[in-house]
Image (cartoon, rainbow, N blue to C red; front, side, top):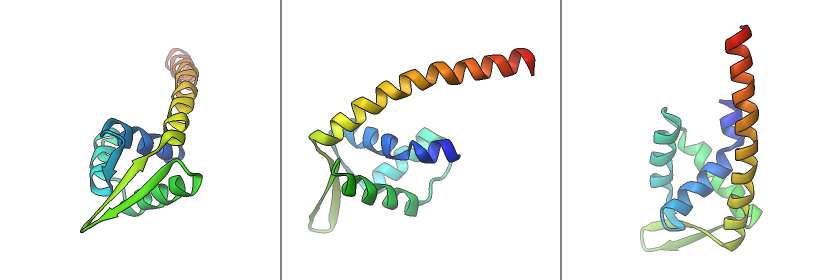
Length: 104
């Protein structure tokens, strides 16, 4: 879970992106739970959203009773850069798994 927690800003950015660059926190939580296959504490998602706002990659939009989180242009760059990192790390993870399964 520690590794997944470290990737949470990337996953949250991805979810906002796939929802049309605009998402409510409840939808982000729901999608994360589907992605992780387990419950995700809402507090963890809100902390991550605050961090993404502080990084300048997500903006908060409040209107009426609803709050939306918007992935801005810097957020798209953030996501694209991290997707490239994930592609590279996937190769490393597969090597580790393969080694452990063959020599374990």
